[in-house]
Length: 546
Image 1 (cartoon, rainbow, N blue to C red):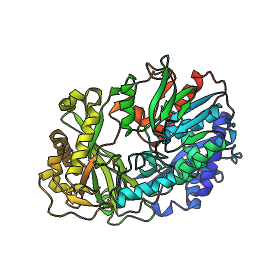
Image 2 (cartoon, helix red, strand yellow; image 1 turned 90 degrees about the vertical axis):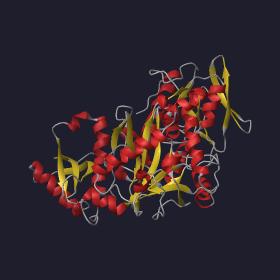
Image 3 (cartoon, rainbow, N blue to C red; image 1 turned 180 degrees about the horizontal axis):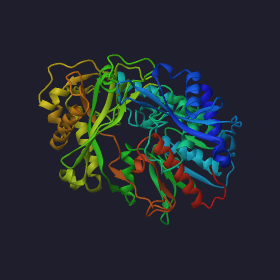
Image 4 (tube, helix red, strand yellow; image 1 turned 60 degrees about the horizontal axis):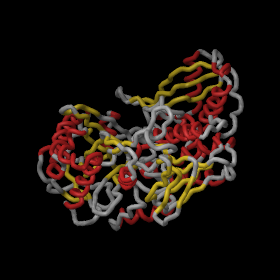
C-alpha cells in the first residue's frame, strides 16, 4: 500500500498549507474491503472510483480500521479521491530545524522518554537548546539490563523496562492510539515518528503501533536528530537535587555531583520515578495524590481471542491478531482492560529489587501465540485509608506494598505468581498452570489472597462480566499474573493550566505521565510538545513551531 500512503502524505502536507485544494476538488467516502483484498491497490482504487461515480481519478487512504461486528470481518477505509493529481509533498518537519548549539536560550529536560524527547524536538524547532539528563542508558545498552531481568532476575534500578532511553513506551508495544485529540497535534507526532523510521502505516491506521522490536531504532534516530541540531544528552545521570534560588529552578544536580543549569527545566521522569516524587516533597515543591489503578495481567491463547472477536475457527489471511477493550463498573469503581497486547508477551517491569511488576508488549508482527492485557481496578483516596499516615504518598506506598508481597510469595527471583482465571474467580490455588509468554517463569500462587480484598472482589466480579461480554473469555485456558500496578502515577505534580508551569516554582514545567498529564506514547509526546511551547512563551521566544 506504499503508493496510497505516499499520496496520502502528499495530500495531508498540502492541505495544511493550501486549504483551497481541499474543497470541492476532493471527495471523501468510506469503502469496505475484504481481508483478502486489502493489499490489492487496483481493487481499492476501482472500488473507490465506482462508489464516487467517476471513471478516473486519484485516490488516497486517509484512515484504515477493522470492522468485526458482522460474521465476515471487513477493512473499512476512509478514502479521498480527486480529479487532479496531488502536488508534490513539502519537506520533512525536521528539515526546518535550526541548529541550536549556540542558542541564547536553553532548557533542561529530566527524562528521555516520549515526553522528554518530543519536548526536545519542539524546543529545537523553537530555537531553544535542549539539555537532556537521563538516569538510564541509551537504548542499545539498555537491552543488556532487560536480558538480565528476564533471564537472571537481576533488576537494575536505573536501567530496566521503565527507565532508560525511550522510557517505558519503548518496550511496551509502541501502541500509538490516544483519545486525547484535543490535547495537541497528533499528526505531527506521528509524522515525526515516521521521519525517524516508523512504518508509514501509522499515518492511516485507526489503532497504529510500531512494535517493541522496531521502536529502539526509532528512538535512537530521534537521539541523533537532537544531537545533530545542537542538543545535549547525558545518560547515566540520575538527578538527586534541584538548584532553586529565589523560588526559581536554576538547574539540577546528578548523583555524580555534576550540575546542569538552564533558563527552564522540564520534568518528564515517567510514572515510576518514585525518588523524584520524594525529592520534590523534600524540597517543599508541591505534589498531590491522584487516582490510579491496580490489578493483574491476563493472558489467553491468541487463537482463542481471534475466534471470539472474528467469529472464525482460524484467523483469515491479512487479518491482524485481534484485540479487545473491556470496561464495567463494580461497586462504584471502574474495572477495565489496559494496554492490551495482541500477539504479545508479558514482561517483568520491576524498577527495584524485591518487587514483582508485570507489563505487556508486542513485536511489530504481533505473532506471539498469546494475547495479554492488564485488567485493573480504579482506586480512590478512600480505598487507601490504611495508608493515610503516608500522606500524599499513600497511593505510592500501597503500590509498593502489593508489589513486595508478590515478590515475597516467590523464590526471590523474577518468577511471577499466577493462577488460572477460573481458579482465581473461585478463590482456589491452581494445581497446574498452562504455558505462558512470561520468560522469567510463573508459579502457582493464591493471588486472590495476596491482592487487597477490595481489589480482588472487584476484579472477580469484573472478570465475570467480561466473560459474559466475550463468550469464551472466561476459561481455564487463561491465566492471571501479578501484579499490574504501573498503569499510571499515583502522584500528580500540579501546574498552571495556562502557563503549564509549576504552581509555586518559577521555570519548572511538569510534563508527561510522571506528572499526571499523559497516559501513553502519543499523549506523552503531545504533552512534551505543548510544554516546550510553554517554555518558549515563558522565555519570550518569537520563533514559532508547526
